[in-house]
Image 1 (cartoon, rainbow, N blue to C red):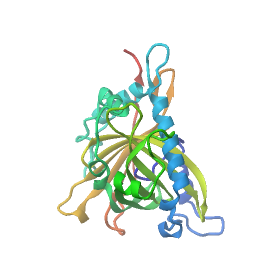
Image 2: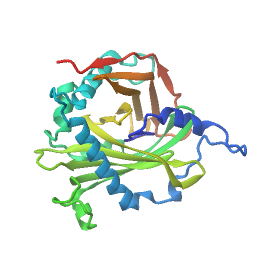
Image 3: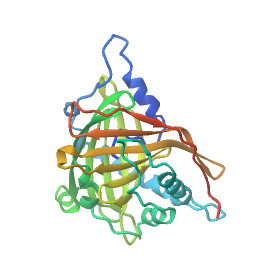
Image 4: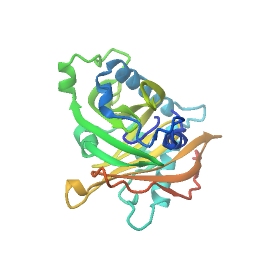
Length: 299
């Protein structure tokens, strides 16, 4: 969720990031206004489990069927399939989407908990520190180590069956440059397998104790080192691209803003791609590319 993500419920992330890139009224640059270590948000259990609860509600809302049996999950899954086949970002030295294999049916199946996933395989490839740009904002992104259920049990976390929360199997905290969030691997009630959820909190520049924006996400595991995230207004494909060594890896985030109108997904604005590296001094340029995506929830 990874990334300078939004869900995770507001599609304002791109405009918000641009706003942060402008100079402060007092002349202070806001290209990198945050320091990860100023507040230990990873220990904020109230926000952690509030995010989990709201992310599960978002997942359920995507799976709710209308009178005709249609779901937003099916519509979003069709948009994912179309995006990865029609927009491969075929530009020199830019990561493409060619390794992704998501289909509409596979997305819906996984979102329903029809596949058993492992938290390490799902999240660990993204662990560590990454450096890049989100629009004009410099981003220092840090995915922490994955915590499995045994460790969560030892800490007495309120994630047992019978509560309003799905069973928490694995957890990963992430600092995303201007805020923080968690990736959750959960087992929903009555589901045979597991589901990926997420939640993100963005902070007020130069006032990091204030949360200015927050949103839920649902995730899709597309294979090792590949995740897809959906918020109420943003879709992005994430991939760790191998290099000759860990230090030569790249972390690509490719996506678009969207709305759902009249049983149709329509993109809002251009597509984008951010590429992060393991090197603080190497921050590839933000990419925008033409995009026209219209997907209907037709049989």
